Every structure is written in structure tokens, then in C-alpha cells.
Amino acid sequence: MDSNLVVRALSALAHESRLAIFRLLVVAGPDGQAAGGIAQQLGLSPSSLSFHLKDLSHADLVKSRQEGRFVIYTANFDAMTGLIGFLTENCCAGATCAASDLPNFCNDPACGNNASRK
Image (cartoon, rainbow, N blue to C red; front, side, top):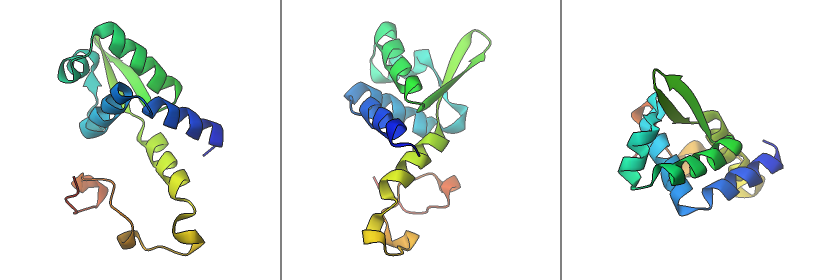
């Protein structure tokens, strides 16, 4: 992953509302969530949500698609795993680390992770 993209992604996530939006979309999975549902769950005004979604989209962390009259937002899981990979690329001082040695970052059973980390 390009370091400029990493900086953009981390900058976008360095705001409480954008981090909450991104985490909500990660939980929603590939089905995503409509803007109205995101705003309602997080208590954000539509204009504030739109501003934050624009920043997350510019950082390539969020994708959107039109479904009828709704815009559905999803986390860009490829970008997320790329960011995690970039951050952990030289983990363990370059030594080979078994996946079981690293903290689990996905609670979704579909990820193949059975840990119940909160």
C-alpha cells in the first residue's frame, strides 16, 4: 500500500465521528448501510454525516452504491486489510510471526476467527 494512501486513511480515521462511521460500516459488512441509518445510529445530522462520508470516501475507506432512492455505504475491506497489512508489515522485528501470535482483529466468524475480543 502506498504511504500517501496510508496517511490519508489514518488522517480520515483520526476523527471521532469518522472512526465511528467506519466501525459501524465494518460491522454492517458487505451489505452496508443507508445514510439515514448511519445518521440515526450515531446521532449525526445529515450534513455532518455527508461531510464525514466524503472524507472517508476520499481516503478510499468507504464505497457507495445506489439502491433505488437510497445510497448504501460500505467499508472498503480491501483498503482496510491493506492498511492493517501496511501497519503490521514489519511486525515482530521482521521475524516470522504466526497468526496465532498476533491479536485478532476480526470478530466476524466469516473471517475464520473464533476469538471473542471486544
